Amino acid sequence: MRPQFASVSEFFAMGGYAGFVFGAWGLSLAVIAGLIVRAILAGQHQKARLEALRQEKDASPNL
Amino acid sequence: MISGFANPQRFLGLSNWLLPIIVVLAVIVSGIGVIWSMVYAPADYQQGETARIMFIHVPSAWIAVGAYTGMAIGSVSFLVWGHALGDIAAKVMAPIGAAFTALCLATGSIWGRPTWGTWWEWDGRLTSVLVLFFLYLGYMALRSALDETSKASKAAAILCLVGTINIPIIRFSVEWWNTLHQRASIVRTGGPSLDPSLLHPLLVMGVAYLLIFAALTLAAMRAEIWKRSADAIQARLQA
Image (tube, rainbow over all chains, first blue to last red):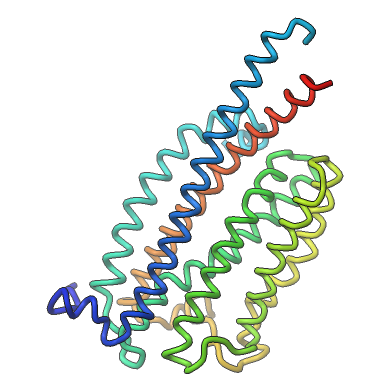
């Protein structure tokens, strides 16, 4: 296997279709990155919330 | 190990070590897949460099359909055996599946413009995948409109199962209404018709997408289990 592009500028030109190829790849990268950030934030938020509520429950004598 | 996925607490323990392994694998396989498909895979002899869109378009389509199938399996396990994790899996897969379906539609549209000469056509495959996107949105809208109860989960599971009729329609749409989208070229009788120089990087990208989807789903399921535990404590504290 050899690289299909002779130079970096040829790679970024994508045979004249750079907007389409990098547009589609960039959009995919952005959406997947967004999903990853969302997953991390949701996990952190719910775990912290659960721990805070557990402490509150332990501190209340009625439960 | 499979039975561990039926109990939320055991699931938290299992996924605690499984998730990091999947994340590491996802990073490695994605790295190989991106470089292979963008730099080493040959340009298509007819489509030129635009064919590199295939390496993200096709895996996103696999996840779009696979996530819905996963939701259907989770919904069945919830309806039949009352597995809470089936309900949790179905719930968290919906927005992830919707995002990959949107990516499938968007990247297909971007690919269609230079190769078909149009961003969109009411072709059988395109239309049935758009219906899949709306099914995801409908499922999410139903879940967010109802309070978290087992009745709401049942209603969502039934809606999900009704929508599975669309999965074989997507699969066979290219044969029933052969207008613009190409026919199956990977999973077909007689083996893949795609050249190995393109098929192999595509399969690597498919595995990468599957690992990313698995990691996102496990992480979201963990968050949902914590959320439900927290909601239960909150309800008792407020009572």
